Amino acid sequence: MLSIRGAITAAENVREEILAAAEELLNEIIGANTLTNEQIISIIFTVTEDLDAAYPAEAARRLGIVQAGLLCMRDMYVKNSLQRCIRVIVFAENGKSQSEAVHIYLREAQILRKDLARTCAVAIDGPSGVGKSTLAKALAKELSFIYVDTGAMYRAAAVYYMRLATWPERDESVLSDMRISIEYIDGVQHIFLNGEDVTDQLRTKEVTFASSAKISVNRAVREKLLYLQREIAQKNNVIMDGRDIGTRVLPWAQVKIYLDADIHTRTLRRLNDIIGGDYETVKKEIESRDYRDSHREHDPLTKAEDAIYLDTGNMSLDEVKQKALDLIREGIAVSLSRGIT
Image (cartoon, rainbow, N blue to C red; front, side, top):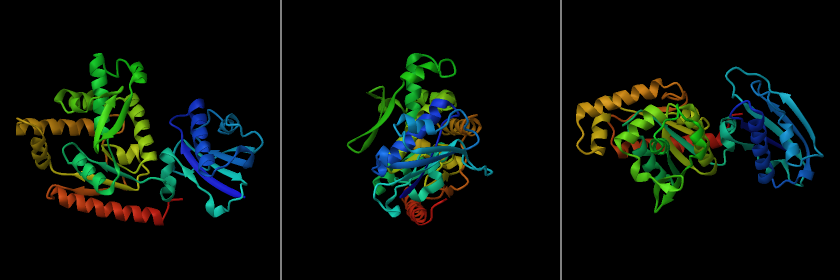
């Protein structure tokens, strides 16, 4: 008999979200282990104390698992443990040995068993102008990973709202009509907004300011983009850069790097990226951006506790790239050899 473990997190304590998360987890377990409903003998569900809007066992019934014994229990409370977590143990008989069982951990629950992650995630965080995107692109090319520019996704959301001549704090309802996707064309990342390639529109000063001051501070926007970013990471090996990747978007990332540099170095780097820039003006813009990012109410810029701090002020891109590659390869090796239970 197989004993298959799994876990997933729910976005919020709402009935349909709990059931949707439980269904997603069960579907993944059934598919990965090539089970039929009739082969499932019983399922034990546990939920953390902050989930009480629904019994996750109802999700199993929705999937047609009607013969198996189902049990829902409250998870043991441990200080600082993962919140809104649904865990399962599925007992089944399909002729396979226990060593063949495929255990599934999804969403934030991947942090519970990094060694069982089916994809690899690298999180790169840091303030504006520190070289996150440049480094992430170089690493993705070297490792054949997917590069995900989260900043570009927020800029696309800014374009969306600017076209509507409104902002999220005035109208969150239009978010349901906003679709942002990433595609690679000839090896270059392109951002699509409702089917239109808007990549060339994302780097203007107006869009950059709106993204920081109006878009990234809005919780509803952040939640919508968070789902997409995590979905990409669950299906691909990714290198993702931003300001809350290691703390919020991909807390389960096998490798987390926090880039930093002094304000003078960052100003000079930003001047190399723009035409006709003035040193003092650019410096003030970076300082203002730093303040907004670190003081925003939702998911502010901060270094994850398990992130590796890397000061790039006196390093060339090649030096930073090589150091990061060493950290990534070491981190992946450690993750594969020692899981977190």
